[in-house]
Image (cartoon, rainbow, N blue to C red; front, side, top):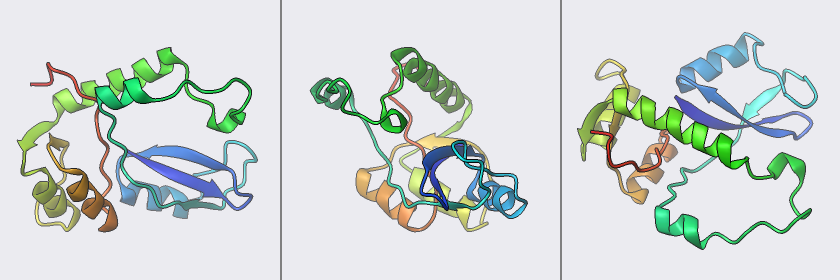
Length: 148
């Protein structure tokens, strides 16, 4: 599952979750996507970069100021964040662990050299950036000790 930053023709920004970039392209071409704010079907994908949050980085984040964040950008409630983390971890447990070969395996699938499948593994920030630049969508999963 990949998360894409999307935008409608009226500049409403939102996220969409898709099985692949092909799934997004197919749904967009078929007119199956619409803006959750205004309902328009003219949707485009925005450039995005992976965000890998470490436990130490989470402790360093400042608390949001009250009434300073627009509703569309307000942080998710803690229960929703935990539910998303749980879903991502469950998906990671079911994925094949390719370890340090993650960037190579992701490329092989993207370029059709091997069949697609759910994989997980390790990659540096630079490697993640290179995958994104090549159009290969990746989704960092919050760390958990018992994924193995």
